[in-house]
Length: 336
Image (cartoon, rainbow, N blue to C red; front, side):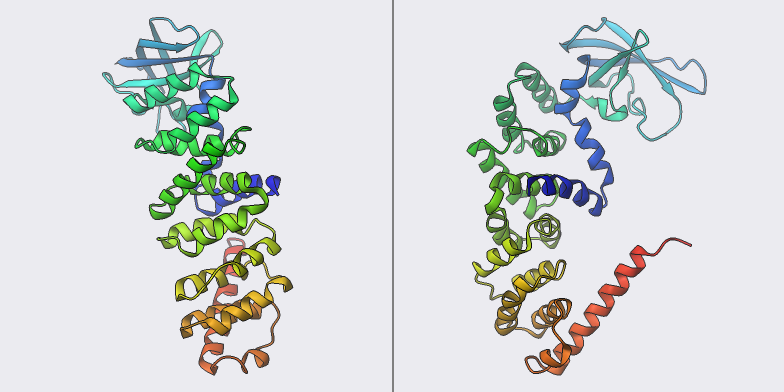
């Protein structure tokens, strides 16, 4: 299951419309700190473009955090606002944390614009702390977990992405607690870190992932948070989802609809009893229509449902299913 959850993280970031996050997982502050030949804090001092085709910025080093860097150096790149351009915001007077690699006798930023970061106090302290414990997996995991609570977005979201692939992240109970707390905050105010947090916590809980995530999903304070968590839950075994739902008391419309939306994504005969229970306990026509739609997906015949729900509810369920299928087909159709 853990391998499927790693795959799920990449899928979830893409589905969420943030394909770039999968790339950024390989260029977090944590990974850049490990991969860089040199890391420094430097101030841009002058823009000395040699021609309209090239952009050149000179830097003065204020602090060397890793490796060896000359007191002053320059970075050269093609001009224009191309993707990954590192020097667009490198105006004289601005201070940056720079992750550098040595190529051809010169220093170049790692990962394009991800390798030059405005040197806020939080980022500067975070990078310095990571470099101080580099190689100590347990300490790294704890530091990343503590950083999930940072008010600096680049630090907290990078920490979530770094923990998703860190080998020690799921072994420490304190790290798991920090992940759970960060996920709860993210469900209330969703960020692009949500897929990483949810997937890493699911890996940490292992066989108990569905039981840990289901109540958070059903009662997530925002629709966006619930949608993000649903993508992680959909990667878990169907039987575990059904068992987690059986353990829940689902009485309100929102929770009932969310349960139905989750189960309609991967129909399984083992879920039929859960859906039948939801249908019996649905307190609004809207909730009943969502559950009936999921039952149709599970192969239940409309004539059978007609004996359990009002005809208007069944009509709404059939219409919902048609609209959903039409939307899926439109998405899958190639552009002409």
